[in-house]
Amino acid sequence: MTFIVAIQLNDSIVIAADNKHIIINEIGESRIDTEKTQKIHLWNKGIIVGTGESYVIKRSVELFKKANPSRLDKLPQCLEISRQLREFEIGTDCYQVENTKLLCSSYSESGVQLYTVQRFSPSRPYALTAINSMSITVWLFHPNIETISVDLQNLYSDLKDYSTFSNQIDWINYYIRHLAPIYQKQSQQDPLMSQSFDYFFQAKDEYITGHISNMPNTIPEIKEISSDYGSI
Image 1 (cartoon, rainbow, N blue to C red):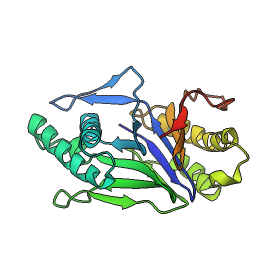
Image 2 (image 1 turned 30 degrees about the horizontal axis):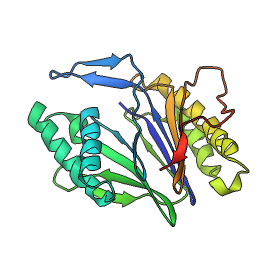
Image 3 (image 1 turned 120 degrees about the horizontal axis):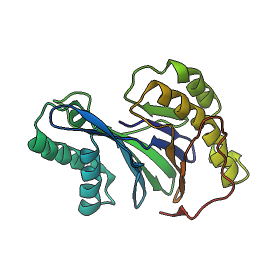
């Protein structure tokens, strides 16, 4: 399962995704993969991340990159094809497969934009929808968010554009300090997600990505920008 927090700012975006991978077999039994899973996928204008069945997500990304990666409007079709292929392999009664959805980013001269790719009923097609500025999108499996509701409200009230910070490190640490307790608290409620998370910060054609182990009783802090920085 996946826990995603996505923030659309006026001039940039922030994404966090947990690292736990749950494998469900043909008879519905689940087991936890002990290896840390990278759920954020890069493409040439941003990232793609999703919730639902990992095979469907990865195949959607692969199809998109092979087809026409400059055409973001092709991503809903790639998700549709990937889901149909997976249903052909394992049947049509898997909740994870049926409800797989994607979140992606793309930059242009006007800035960077987050989009969702999802459908709201099995009879409707997948739609590519832009996320409003200065908003937070949270995708999760466990329905109880009581322990993090105040943290999410504080995060929303404290949203700041990248341009308000004096440097990249201050920008990253500002949001990581908000995100770390959210992942710690929710992972105690939901055993299917991890307290650790990967992050992705993007402003136009520049991005910074990395990993936060998020150990208890610690305050994560980035001291310097690592090699996971570049131009898309």
